[in-house]
Image (cartoon, rainbow, N blue to C red; front, side):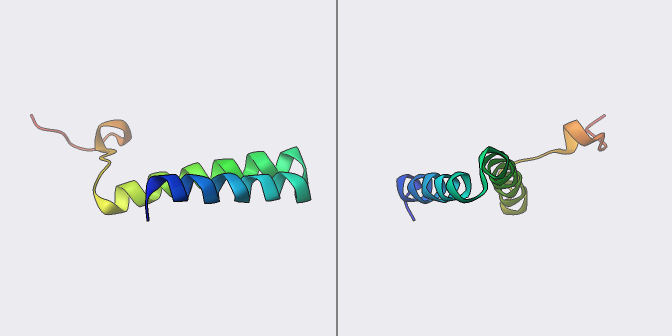
Amino acid sequence: MPPTVVGLFTGLLLGIAWTIGGFDAFVGTAVLGVIGFLVGKVVAGQLDLTPYLGGRGPR
């Protein structure tokens, strides 16, 4: 799926969350979306968090 379509759907879902639940629901949905995005990047191997989590680096 092209990134523009993903961005369109994300914007629409955030707009629906804001309309139905107010600003708190909008912020909560946005935060959970960012967390899900980061987890997906880690699982796909596109993001390495070991330098930030205190993992053993090269010595």
